[in-house]
Length: 118
Image 1 (cartoon, rainbow, N blue to C red):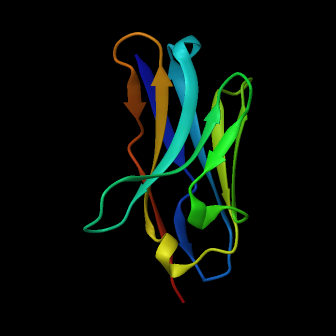
Image 2 (cartoon, rainbow, N blue to C red):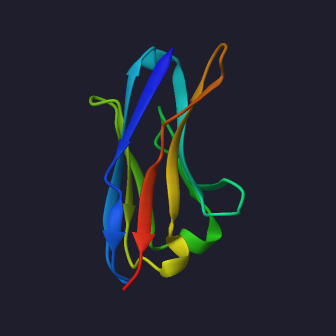
């Protein structure tokens, strides 16, 4: 089993910044990729960014490119999402996901609320 605990959400004004953290514990040796997703009210849960656990290769959803940065600290088993130039449309619950070898092949965190509003 893998446990994921997110933190760092909150209320921020448009143009502001937040950094989300996702700490993994348990069978972390099985993790090969981590991702951040978000879900706004009434909408589907969509990918925001992903990172390879070993190589650090990253990918981003088009609307966050140049504003968000995903990174990881393997020593701390933690993945981060630095969010800059936040917009009201970034408001959502943000979830961390771990992709793992074996079964189950994925785990989710509990989510953290990000609200961008003046």
